[in-house]
Structure formats: C-alpha cells, structure tokens
Length: 117
Image (cartoon, rainbow, N blue to C red; front, side, top):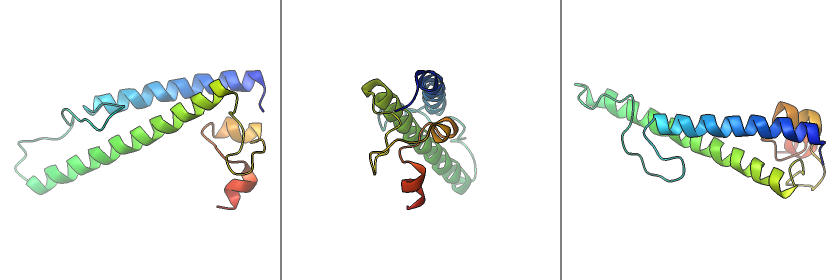
C-alpha cells in the first residue's frame, strides 16, 4: 500500500485530471458518460471541401474517444483509492512503487510486470 500523503496528492491530481477530461469532452460538444455527441465544436459544416470537413470530424471524434478513455482510467484509479486497493499491481498483486505512482498515477502494474508486457 501507499502512504496517506501520497494518496492525498494523487487523489487531488486525479480529480483535477478528471475535471479536465470532462471539460475537454464537453468542449467538443459530447457527453462524457455516453456515446452522445450533440454538436462537434471546431468543424465547419459549411466548408466547401467535404473531405477536409470529414477529416476534421474524424480527428475530433478521435480526441473525444481518447479523452473518454483517459476519464475512465482516472475514475478507475479514484475508485481504487476509495476501495483501498490503489497501488496494488493488477498482474502480480504486489505493491506498485510509490515513485512509479507519483510519476504515473494511472499505473496499474508494478515496474516488473509492466516491463514484461
């Protein structure tokens, strides 16, 4: 397990990251917790070049998907903190080093298990 100071710092960082991911998704006109996209922000629907408009739309959908994945990872980490299982390797069940968690709060594997992937 990890010490309380680290957990407090990581929780604060993760909550900030969650808020940023939600804001990013909403800024694009999408819902953070469903597949719904009301209106894509940043795409000129009246643009004369349909191919360019389609490319922009695809890029924004990809950014939305990435932000939703990141949001899921952050919320999973926050859930582990709440359950008291944060800092436990998903593969071997051993502790994830505090230095690794500080550097990468979304880490789900210890260094040894991560290096084997």
